[in-house]
Image 1 (cartoon, rainbow, N blue to C red):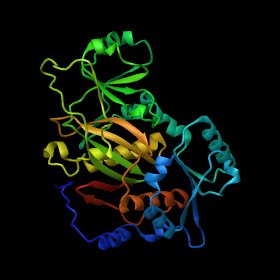
Image 2 (cartoon, rainbow, N blue to C red):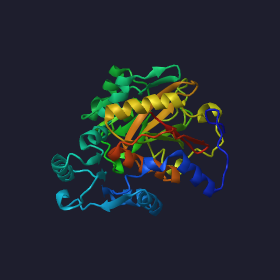
Image 3 (cartoon, helix red, strand yellow):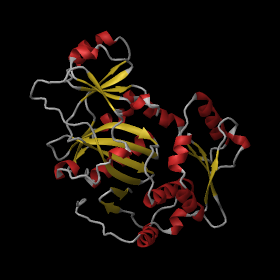
Image 4 (cartoon, rainbow, N blue to C red):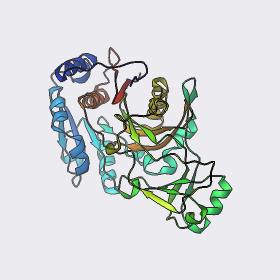
Length: 358
């Protein structure tokens, strides 16, 4: 399938690696020869397994970047020294350890600041920056679905929904997005009676038909990767709903739900325009103060340029290819040495889209 009018050729793996090296100059990825870049990481065991793959560590080592595990039960000052602290842990104790260390060592780069990450752990605040942005240009318009926050008293939900003018069915999501299995639970409420049986605190989002496909946009520093994922099927809102009650769905948009190789209607499968994503990601990086996150985007079915951001996640688990590795290494190096690329890095393929953002 064509992607923004460009098609990448199929090459042998060795040729791809050589080409990747040419796209990202070695001077951009490597610290000065006399220095080593020490990255302390405090991650869950699941994140360590998915992120710190041997190939990534090997590539980083060639560029002078060394990964060192952090004992989050001990003061950081007794460990290191670190040039960068890469983390995805929750809890007040860890946050206090990190803040104490950062106060004493302001020269250390923290990816990312705890206060900025906390902003994404609540679905009420998570999408506010997108709503305030209300991005609209010649390439399309980006907003958020109409939504309602419910913190208590489920019996009042039907009246609250009517007063807000929301249309059924409604997507039901937990208010807290802390990375736990529960925070990823997703339901669809089809009728008013079922609304009073929900379990607050939660977010009710108006369902937008989107052809059963969403776009996961991964942001690593100034690099973007876009992949397609299967999502919830469309609902015919012109006819009385045959379904009633609340239906729970397995976790959608995960890697197992990849739609990159599926035969899809071109109007559904076409990726959001590159300039639109560049503008959106640039603004969100600035507003959120984050370097490692992803946004879930849907296109309203039947439109060409009407997009909605429905979720934002910090430091998501992603299948790491050699290009993802280069992007991560580049992000780490740039954060400490503020090196600037002499040429844009862009790779288009049927499985995703790497975009250079200025």
